Length: 250
Image (tube, rainbow, N blue to C red; front, side, top):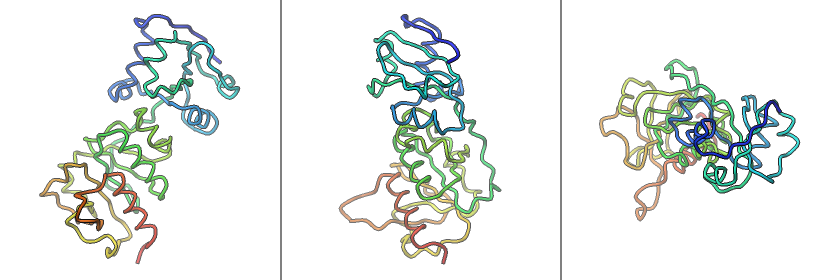
């Protein structure tokens, strides 16, 4: 441990900065983020290459030896203050870590498969990132519309796998016309089961509102029942990546 603090006032500047990390804007401004959940916190402390800064807890909470051995600040919050910070109601210590920098996307990234995500919902984005990790995608491009990839709700849905991916920030989904080798998941596209996947491609997943009609991209569809209008974006991505892995390059 470096230093230990006890905070009992919600006017405390350190506490105010912690509350700000509950918002994507706060994560971006401070370049720090929150990790919730006993298992995820322990795994991060043991295995992550990203720097842990502070461990937040309240009175009478168990602190494991792994946490106590780390070179980080220990901050004890009065119980009501901790509960206000603990959005998930997990009642376990919360870790503050450095948020990796999200660099601008470069079209010559060299990746054989890049996934473009415009997902603004943190849960959807986290689930999509977890699928990318599960199916071997290493390069993910977030459009301007996407949520911050290290917001705590993204991290929870991704089960921490967002820290293992190469994530960059690209242009708006409305400005992707100049992107080469771009294919988009669209219910009116070519069936993905009949798609002859090229060696290099980029895959765009849309939000519930759909993709811009004039977007210059190939279209791929996932056949579903006529009784269902569409699939959740993260679900669609998982199916597409599974199909790519199952079939491989022809």
